[in-house]
Length: 498
Image (cartoon, rainbow, N blue to C red; front, side):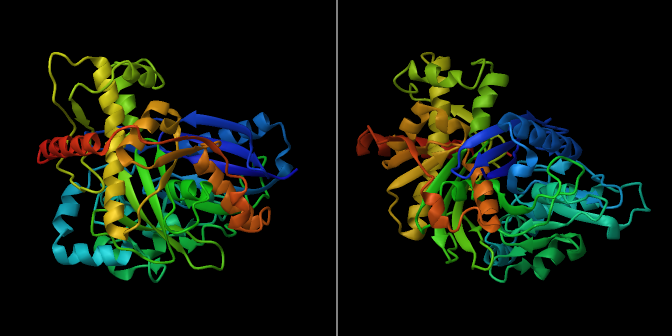
């Protein structure tokens, strides 16, 4: 029996999953890591904690699968994107905590460089708007601030990367000749990579004062990144797939044809629309990104809409407002009322991402009356997740001319049946949940397995996709349009708070 190991390093936790050749989960293990909030708007992770957790979950998943590590044919890595770490290759120690994709500390610098000429240049080169979301300004901040009072540091010993690069370097030897590489999807999220020439871009590196010597070698998502050499049970096994988490989810959903779309409901919502080998630049607030690249083939591109707060909104209701004791309780509570009582939540805790790109926005509740209770708030939270997704889909329709017929969904919140029904209502398309919702890890396993010869082609992977459930809209167009109009008013009132 052939097995694949997927390492899924996410925003709140790290997990490892063992898949068999039929894409069934045979074993898994997961550990959360600390969320560090030094100041308002600052979000950090400890890279060393993430590395230690990675080793633990690998061992745990293999034990859970009850197999020998030698039975694993290849390893795939998928990771939270944009989160940035810089480390000293002689010691293996980060020079500062990893700065997380949600972090907004560099907004002032982004404002300084965001004149219309450079914004247009950046978008044409990288496919991305100038925003704190991406890696470049995070890396610049670390280089500018980590060595205050330490004049003897040596830049030639530093390596810079997203979390996939950090894990790969440690897995392949670390200070003992670890390999410094990344894949094309993660590179495309840095604001430093030219998505047309497929190289690090000189103009962008100069603008952010990032030396190319710090950056990793860029490879196809499905290619040989090296073998494990970390003194652990999987030593000697090749790492043959790396994908940013949302790209991996698209791959795991086998959405290989132009127009196919997936939405992952995680800490945030991320909707990717496959545009094939064509670069489509958005005029409606979406991101142009590289979806994936197979070894020896041209890259496949995508339009993406990124929502900063979705699953984390439910966590906020649980942890901060204590309306629910567990995230799973929100469905039953929200289902106890037929509607939101006319209230809306705009969860712009650190601004609004696509399609608005408004860092000045902040979270609000509007439409409150004495009638409102915690059930209405719970339902409004689910509607906020679905409405933000609808904003993205509507922008995609304007950009591409595609008429979306179905939306494949995955991620933790896709298990919420009420949310999926609300999503189908607002989109007026079929929402389809697969049997295996761990599509992010599955996509990493697929990429690794293709390169390792476990599967022969992407078409073969489609045979493993199976539907769990689908939802169709139950509301009429008049009610849907009324909901969008009121949501637009709520969005407007969230703006210009900062």
